[in-house]
Length: 156
Image 1 (cartoon, helix red, strand yellow):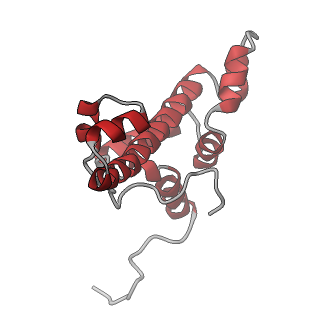
Image 2 (image 1 turned 180 degrees about the vertical axis):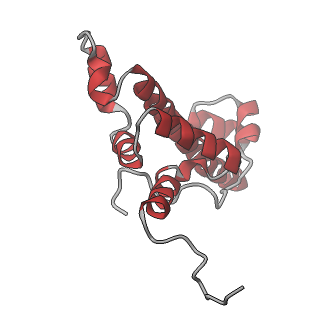
């Protein structure tokens, strides 16, 4: 066997850059298992959807998909790669939004916990418009370092 330092790594060709693109675009899936993420990528590939197309729809939070679907025009999905591609893109927008909802809830929990240091649960509940019992449920601070640090629609 010949020694070839770093020679056994794949070329910086399309496969590696495509993998890096998928990793970046699907950053909101960090907590998912690698098998799950790979299955998502394979479904996109099978439908002919590229990482750039996914990124484009995540950046506009699915607005173009929604506008096209709401238009009532026949065959509206063709412009986006067909119904299969649109279903996958819409599911990915939903996955990102779920991630962002969890991120926002974690920020709220930190604040509710801090408010309880100064105010009663009744006061906090009234100020936030939630039931007193809910305040204790909300006050479980947990900012997970795995949350996205920025949204896809902000410049990187």
